[in-house]
Length: 222
Length: 290
Image (cartoon, rainbow over all chains, first blue to last red; front, side):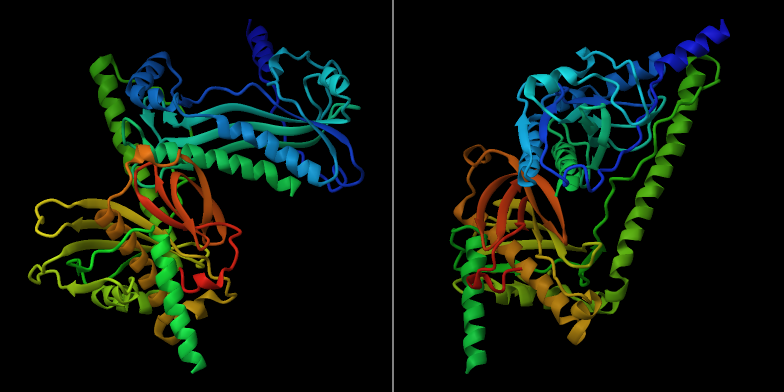
């Protein structure tokens, strides 16, 4: 029974992908056909890690009702423009860039069988064939909105604007990561954050997290 | 002669640009600026709280009953909140260390001198007088200002948060306009900033502070005197990137005007901000703009 539980837990916990720095040769040696795609954008929402027990989740959800209602109205449009921003930089480097307009449902892609270190877990081959690509730059946001850490029932800090996810370049020959960068941008409000109903300071912090994300994804391409 | 010509040009440029920066609205012909009660000018180091707070974790409360659980959570909350307050104070104290090389200059700065210097920089078509905190009221518009200056951690720029109240003539019961005006100076590119700011008994530091103060007063006074456009009539909110020191930062705001490499924006709180834009060209007509 214990072994079964351990096996299940180990099986569920996918290893965290380590950063893969972009080597000088990846995008500078010769022009490549590269696609830029963004995964389906999550809706802006509140996130309360640390509020683990059922009663904690209920208490934290109730105490943050007004904040959550506001955060869910925050737009994510500026995050979508990062794709064009990145594509523009790749074009300036002389690459043939295809911006894939449709959002990519990464979970719906087939898993790769021959997993290797610093290699993609999902199979992007179909996209490569469809758009005639050598490489694919994927921008995958998993959480956007506001994050507030908790210790069970008690907040352990002020809420912060957040954008989390990852960006990576997959070499479609072997599905190795040419570049992998986890994204976790957190920004605090200037001054008081608790300003219902519009939370201007915290909303601004969210937009600052968006711009921070833009900066970290642009930087290796400059 | 050449020096005089240069000075006249600089004054002209300042009057043209400062006015433009504060929007094309007229200043009242006569107005007074009342000094705040404090003598000393408040300065701090610009603090960043992005890394404040503690990580997510969990605690199992072993107290029996609902009352026991509530008591345990309350006690735990007190401990965590005390730690968080302490952490914020530590961040502020650490940020203030950037001011250490400038303490002799900053400790000697007084509101009366600084505000007189600022008034001398405000557009020449407007006659302003300085009132001590307890001086008798004067006819015309009245401005109350509580400035709080900050220096960026790279020491290259100053940021002013000025809490301003403007009273219309004959209506001193309620401010006609009340807002915080933030003005961010352009970053200095000097290699040795300590020497630059401190030279000649801190002349640059005093001049830059007075320039920011003057611009903030003009912005608020023009808004109060000529009437600001309702937020709904302004441009849509967008993220504006600007320089805060040598780094680029962002603010969600409505852009009210752009001139001389600066933008006047209204942020989500409704504060007015005059900020230096990145990659702005060097227009000679804008010499003297902070």
